[in-house]
Image (tube, rainbow, N blue to C red; front, side):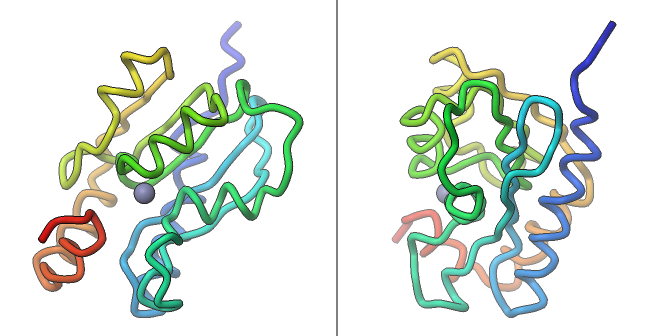
Length: 151
Ligand SMILES: [Zn+2]
């Protein structure tokens, strides 16, 4: 019997966070951390613009909101976009076992590196995620380049 959670259902939480960020005037990237059974531990979104804080990415926000966990091997980090190097580092540091990404079209991030290091990466190639961030990048190229550390 397949007891894995419905990854698309989990993605909906991250997408809702991304929409919230967009409504706040921020970059539309959201994330959520779940336990193995699909129970939400914490969720958040990129707030670099809102809080003038480049360290608040969707994944780091969700991670912090989840508070202290006994272990992360069985947790699932769900994010609307492939995690950047900073967030990929977080996944490796805490041994998060599974990463579900909404898309890797707009940005590939560290997903190949995560896979090479044994992280189970599931790329849903979700059309809504691709369009939401793609539209944002097209309208705000400077903001985007700052977010991913490009000059
Ligand atoms: Zn990041």
